[in-house]
Length: 364
Ligand SMILES: *Cc1c(COP(=O)(O)O)cnc(C)c1O
Image (cartoon, rainbow, N blue to C red; front, side):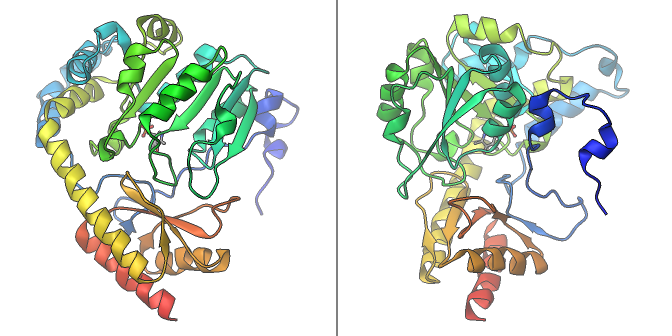
């Protein structure tokens, strides 16, 4: 029998906001030796640049001697590579332990308990977790079936307005002109554009972070760069914003191996582009095949597809059927998503295996 947390913790040690909140629920991570086709957390199916492995081994050296010493709090090697690659000045770039840490830093830097944050629904659920942990008030506005930016976001007075672009789990991208209009409409708040999937999309909001005083763009190495396990993220914004956020960052948030891995991954841009193009090609083929199976597929500018079934029974059933056959996809038991599964784009053989099993499920 599972015990409620309170039976462990005794009296109310926790802040009220923490006691009452749900923790973030990540996608399942099976054991490394499990024989599953893993299409549930949008990891890249292809390995990172071989230069990443070489740089990590070089940093380790023969004895691991350098690990005695703390890593660079300024992560200069990584930030210099990022500044050069993305066309920013060094003081406009900050590094995080994954973009999840970058997002947490934004709450720490900008949001007092009781202040408002705003985002559309459904989107990346970590925003809600971070808002709860902060004790922030949440203005949430539903997307309609098109997943276009809801007009209710415009003119918001929230401290942070968070937009994943492209959005997860829908996969669609908003026009950058709409994001510019949103940033300019805000009354005293910052627009955070979470660009976890930007490399899969035709356009990005970096120019807004370069030119508008209230726009921050976040990036991750977890999807396009095949480095989810290294925990690497970046943030771009004005010098003034970055300087302030930097004050609340843990000094050694990136370890020595991650710093060199990230720098070298950016330098091998061609490797990342090749993988991204392969994933996009597979995604287009997957979307065609799913549509041919009679399912409804949202247009995606990412490495995943949101696939709708005739009803929630069928969607949940598909998730369970596939899981039994060793294929993990993501099912969200939440409002507006109960009739859908999200499929990460794997290798072509993985996607073929998925299509075979899904065909069996739909024929049953
Ligand atoms: C995967 C993802 C992230 C998290 O990236 P990490 O760098 O692995 O922490 C952030 N935002 C969105 C929308 C994501 O899908």
